[in-house]
Image 1 (cartoon, one colour):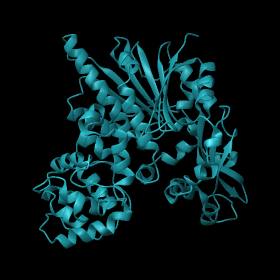
Image 2 (cartoon, rainbow, N blue to C red; image 1 turned 30 degrees about the vertical axis):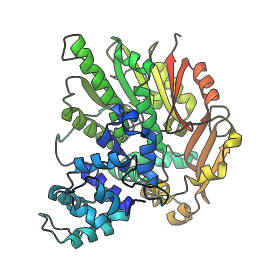
Image 3 (tube, helix red, strand yellow; image 1 turned 90 degrees about the horizontal axis):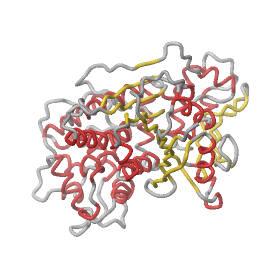
Amino acid sequence: MAILDWKLKKEIVRIAFGQMRQNDVPDLVMDANNFDESRYGFAWSSLLEMYGHRFDKDRINVGPNSKYRQFFYELSEQLGCDEVVPGTTIIEANATEFVRVLPVGTKEKLVAALNQGGVQFEFREALEKIIQDINEPVSREISNVKAPELNLFPNFGKSWYPIYYTPSESLPTIQEGLASGHIDQSLYYQNTDAVNRWYSITNDEFYTGFDQCKTGLLKLNRHPEWQQFVGSDNCDGVVMLAGGGAHSKDAVLIKYLLEAAKSNGENKNSSNIQYQYTLIDRSSAMLELSRTKLEELLEKKDGDDYIEVKALRRDVMAMNGSEPVRSSGNLAWFITGGTLGNLDEESFFNSVKRVSFENDLLVVGVGCFSDTDDLDLDMLAKEYERDVVKDLVAVPLSAVWASLSIEESLEEALSSIKVEALADKHSDVPGAITVIASLPSKTLGDIILFKSSRYNEKQLIQFAKQKGWQHTVSIDGLDNSFKQIVFKRTAD
């Protein structure tokens, strides 16, 4: 049987667990870092695919003998559902009956989410009707506020976190991008609204990049080379480059670092073995969200004595060595989620080279292919034509459009956005396939709104080698179309 009202139930569960992304819930239920495939009879990647995209399909059988039944049993227990057989309601009943078996405290979370804009817009009306239909006394009434955006910032816990920055650094502007014909993509993430729009993309059922990347990081944690690096006395920690706002990926790495730190502490009879975990991003809003969530995680796991989290507002393309990211040992530099494909690769590798030491690691999460003949360029372009992607660029453009002398309206311009996948263009890495979204303005000419490159793995490895980085291992995500490629810094 397929799971009834599955998409709505996923949103309800997301709110109950207080997560930003629906697909981060399985990690909380079964601890992805320590997942035992032999115990459950299915791979982590299979569970993620089922949870994210398949449990509502007719051909999926989640009956009494299903191998996935144990997941729903544990999910039900952690939610505190009032069921005779845990997991039955979420599988077999409709969404209203599922909400009925949730604890009162969880129902109050649902009401609070409705009142505070914490429900994805497409589910708001249905969830509001459920709360009214169950006709149970809940301490909070549903207000008439129809807030369309997710409220991602908590109103409890620590109230502020420091964000270090370079006062002399000059960040680009949208006006400059319009004038040059290429808008810097970091400008789409400069406020809290951008955080909301980013999570709309990552919760979209057609977007798999986040899960691909996170799964690859989980596999990295189990790889001997990474374990040896982290366990070394010379390891200072991790620097996450241009990854603000993706804290559940940071959590994968921090959980492993914390386990290693506590183990080292026991072995060395010390309780203060510490790693630095530094987030570097241009967006203060994305840094604030990640820093807040990671501090909450460390506090929950008693990890403050082992890991120090820093947030640094900085251009990763122009680092110079003044960044407070290490003591004197080696670092692992990460750029995840295909972000390299949004950047000028030559400038990025040069920037990291300036601040890295011999034997530092660089872990690059990118979309990969081995043969361009296997790629459908039209289908690749269509992945970027969804409304949630256009919404990401629409709001910052609207903020400056009225101040420009442009013939067409913003609505006309946005409706004319052209998306195409091109080979061997707009990338410094030979053989790359790059998706380009451009706005053909009558007044300003074609303006590139964003680019996203996928790479021939061998060509990217060769490109990195020329920049002083020796390839050591490549790790697949959910499949071999996305990889975590690990490099080691060679001597100059």
